[in-house]
Image (cartoon, rainbow, N blue to C red; front, side):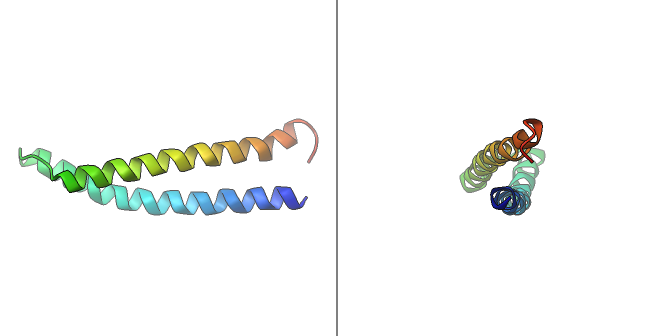
Length: 80
């Protein structure tokens, strides 16, 4: 039972972190789109931020999916 609560809490924390990072990535993405629309090269800093945020979001999503498999895998096996 404690393990199930721990998994739920970890998933919640990761979801909140993903939302936060997606907001930050959206700012970088807006700067990239603005540069494209103005037909200028985007700043290397904006590209780097976008790539960093995207990488971290993907890593967290993978971690969250693994935790969800642990949590819901128990239900499928009749352990919950």
